Image (cartoon, rainbow, N blue to C red; front, side, top):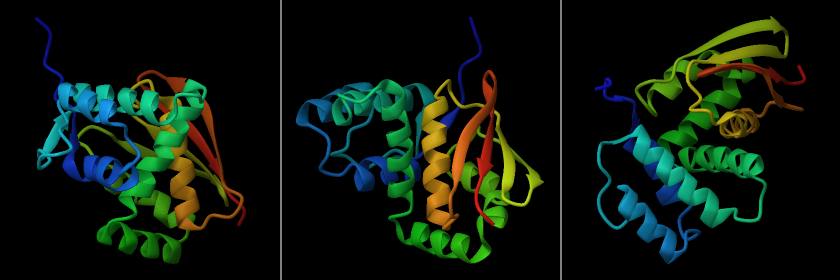
Length: 184
C-alpha cells in the first residue's frame, strides 16, 4: 500500500475561486458534480481539501465554464480566475496595494509565503537573471503547466508589471521553471 497523499488546499483558496471569482458562473449540474466530488458550495467550507478533491473540482469547472476553449487555454483562464478571486477579499486588496507599492521584483520574492497560505505543499525559488527577468521554480505544478502560467500572468498584472510575459522555461516533473519578464 502506498503512502497517502497529504497535499492540501486551504479553504481561503477554495473560497476565492468558487465563492468569489466563479460566483454565479457555475451551472446547477456543475454544482451537483462538485458536491459529489466533495465540495458542497451550499455548506460552510472545510478548513482544507485533499488535492485529489481539488483537482476533480477544477476539472468540473473547466468543462462547465470554458467548454469551448482549448484545454490549455481553459487552464490558463482558470489560473486568472483564481487570482481574481483571491484578490477580491479584504486581505487580497491589501496584498494588491502592497504588491504594487513594492513592485514586481520584490513582490515575486514574497511568492513562496503567499503560496504557502494557499496550500501545504508548493515551494518556490526565485532567481533574478537581470532587471525585469526572473526564473521561478515551482516544486509541484500538478501537471497543470498552463494553470500556473495563468496564475503567474494574473499575478504580474495585479502587481502592475508593465509588458509582463510568462513562459515555460523547462519542465522537470513534478516541478517546472517559468521565465517571467516585464519592462523596467
